[in-house]
Length: 409
Image 1: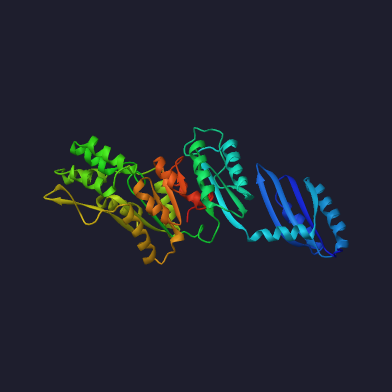
Image 2: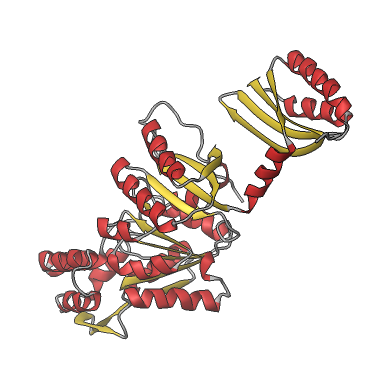
């Protein structure tokens, strides 16, 4: 069927310089062209610009393309034209109702094999990659430079039949290829998270405080064996907790004070907390550890909520007992839900971060649950994990770019 209009895709490549997009759209503007889609990328000063436009009066399309060719020659860039049929364009528009997802790849250094294996999984699920962008800074060649990391974000689209299957495949690749992979729905909640809940021991701090206390009490080996078994999910957390606390009986309160003043903060925690606070996040510590140490972190980072376990102290000595209910995995999930309700935050806007089996209930409840440097069983049960860099890697999963992370508010 004859149509008066014509749809044309123009691809422009060459050395990037200021004014290319302006020059090309000025030419199209002379002919009243309607921009249907536009995209541009710049990799190492090499430009790739695509403009999909419609000329309403078909007889002007030849003149428009001639002027674009002259302008491209003048600016020393290559130009290529493709004609798009109405049927082809209509089919393409119809795809916009399909699901949209964000796949994030994060590591100290990304390899071609990692990218190819991940994109193969994406293609195998009949998802199409719409765009790829780097969200970390430019990668230096000198790998001895401290704190180098590489992160890219893929925007994909398609009719996903089995979300659990693609997440399972990506979790397997993450462990096999030593790369952190996040798969999230690209919805209104992803860039609008408002509450983040952290485990404390081995998450916000680089130690299990109960093990430190046990060493001072001379029962380190016994307590560590129970701790490891609990973290692997082999024994009930409440049972393990009671056994470990009982072994601390008689320890002097001054030991708690000394440890609390020298807590080893997890790599990336300072930067993460700073950015989250500046962006207005509510922050909670939900810990199977102790309030004595959680309160220290609350003061340091401006944490809004701390829920942990309170040790019973009589005459300056630990009694081997605790006060109140144990904050176990079930309680952590309940607290996350409660805080979200109090703050009027949808659960899809929440984040939970932890390393142990007792963190899985809150990790699986939150809109974004992250297993951080976790045991294999925990990583397999969580949808997202970070194992290659510090806590600030969470910011990349939220879509922050280095330029934003380092920005002074």
